[in-house]
Length: 458
Image 1 (cartoon, rainbow, N blue to C red):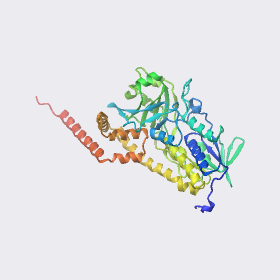
Image 2: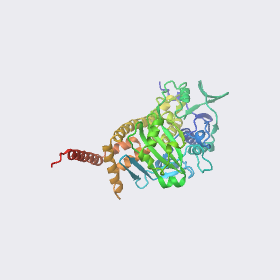
Image 3: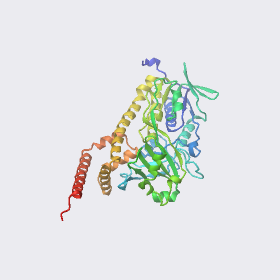
Image 4: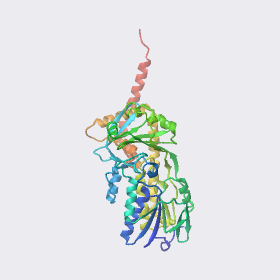
């Protein structure tokens, strides 16, 4: 039951906020919360609980992410006053190289309008020494510290609701807050704690993916990969998407699919298109990379808020398979706006925070349809041949629109909403061209079969 306006729970001068998780979602919320509080003329205190040290290499400082940010997100952050230092950008991605069983083609961005950048979430892979790598997550968290946030390197072991607030328990310490913000990713133990204070909350459904970092050296990475992200649309069991992303002296391998395991990884690494990307004689299966099997959302959480508590980022809604950092920005900023424009009650979040989650959820539903279509193409050499020829012809043009190339770029990189991608696939000219190519290709294949089966006359 919605509260009357006079009974709305609101923040006030001196309010205390506890943020669990110092990754992008938690940092974005804190950054915008401080800006909004200043604009409204009162002070707030924010405590951020984050046990990872983003200055460290390997798992101790990494939030397990492929590390891709779009140019549009970088521009939005710049407009918000978050200017990423050059040390964070490992390499600007100016093209992607599409690998199919039938061939390879390079797809360039149109005038650089959809370019992306590769980053490290921590300070580099396990074993990194003497590098100039700066952590993306660490940079955002430092911005919050500059605004006044206190960082607690403590693990939250319990969350308890009280009549006038919510308490966080860490070891023998208990601290009470007016508002709790959960930015804990997909950590099942911590999400379970939130179910104590959000009875209606249902965590996201997840699946396992795979990320690894291979050290190859700057010269090898530049010579063999350049500023191109290599994308693989191969008919391999369990894999929806595979990519090799250049990052300075490293190559990041990302595999998305359903419950990725060692056998699936080995089948990918053993495929000819992947082997051909590396220097001759490279034995990837014998290398020991920095690797992880992080979980990703395949459905988003339900009812991720209650009085005085809200979940953001992957804990609530993310983008299917892509651009989790962008979703962290959207949900973090939306939660901060909701808190300061409407209040911190359940009805307030339902009114002004839920629409953002609904928008992401609807977009993900469209994304599932797109990936179903992608899977059909992935399993068909004929359809991949049609797609390949269309892209090659588009890239050969000096002028004119490159509809199919642009669609593939945005699908593989997550640079555009799935709704936008789907609407563009309905372009009459693109549909007509694709239909004609499929029809003529099908007719030719039948003709070749008939000709091949025609008896020889002696």
